[in-house]
Length: 215
Image 1: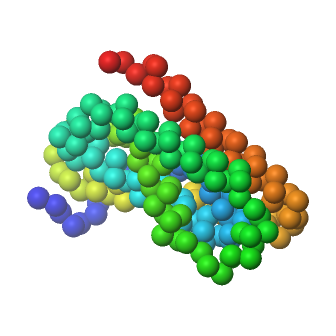
Image 2: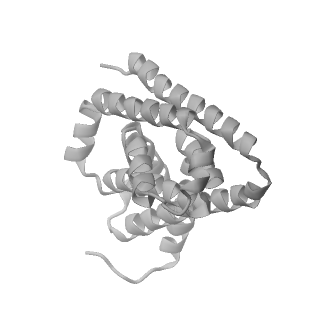
Image 3: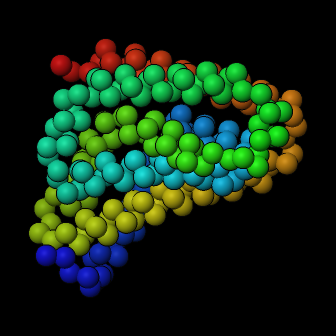
């Protein structure tokens, strides 16, 4: 039974959730690089929606870990090789597209934003890393959530994680957007090339990591 009353303990779990959300989102992986690139090329909203897709995928995995949905968790672990391969392919495709993208065309097309595409692409890139569920499982155990008898602390912690993740992506996109107008067209060309190479390298790293998965 879920008690809607939020006590002092729940507030503590909410704050801890925010810290976890920021900590899991902050490392500059492929999504961070992609978020920065889209903010520079398309604006703050495009960058934030990219981060929102990543945060949404994280909260899905966090919910599975928090509520102990063992069937889904077991499925993700059993087929993690195939899921990672899909994620690596997506990263390579996105990286190649970024490398080949023309900043002049991107500037001209700023009024025709594909926000749904930004959300879906970042969602799939993040959700094809099933190891995330293991990370959240370990985090919840360290917070003592595996021993609680009520759903309240879990729900409050999940809300905090999602809030923290969104706070991080919003802060990142706003910070990058401050310097956006100072970046020249030639710089945009290099940013697209470097971003494309880095995202592609992350994709290759996913394939390389397959050799270290315990059968």
